[in-house]
Image (cartoon, rainbow, N blue to C red):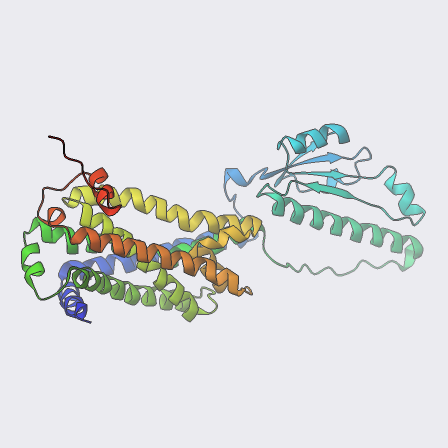
Length: 397
């Protein structure tokens, strides 16, 4: 536990720094600004006037319709679906070629079947590999439900004398939310929860690269501490600060009225996710010669890490595939949404967090043990990889 000495020292210096206090205030202001914008945006969407979500959500998914009697096509949502009236054979070819998400086939003479009390079969063919399939399925189900209700009301009204027909009082009740709105709400909350993890990379860089530029690395290494104690102590201090920041953000979101179920478990998963992110940041900081090089490396790696978190989460909303659970953001999203989660769904992201954490911290410690990484001259990346693999450099006379 000797690394705790470094942790206490780093925390003391950081928390007493005016620069750190300024950063915390600016970050909290950013959170308030983002929450305000998010609430205004969602309020505009849910208002009666509404707003256009984005140009890309218009004609979001394509569907081919084989409907010679215009029984279904007139009732489909043309704002969301790109509807094409195509004959059955051509639509099958388009489905196989991936040019359409689904095909809906209406029966011949549906009105005659309704009048003779026959069952009407509507055939729907969906490309299961298309992530837009859930949108099409929701829209088709809504259309068929509305059409069924309309036919039933029409049949009932035909049995009642006209003078006894009373216009019913209609009360609209909405169930669930449209998929794009679900994406916006869930992703926005998830981004707000994970944002603190990427706001402290400069502290890791300053803690490690700063020692090189200030030429104080010799003093720290001369202390009665191992290299692993130094790296673990510095990074633990950053993780504790992230823990405090994340707790403040979650409490703020709850006070602001955001619906976050199981906040304690959400907090734990977000905090665990910070460990591999700090580990990877530590690797970059240990390898870099100066601040500029570290900042460039962080920019590139953070883009990859953000994509790793967000893309599977978006894929889960669309497809509910098992592979999308690899992202901790997917797990957090499902937790604060109140979904039932199996043990396997927990194991996949936790395993990915554990493996990346072990590899990144092991790599960071191995690099920090090298005198040429701390004092220079730094070897090239190929040489470092060869040393990690135990490949000796051959000398030729």
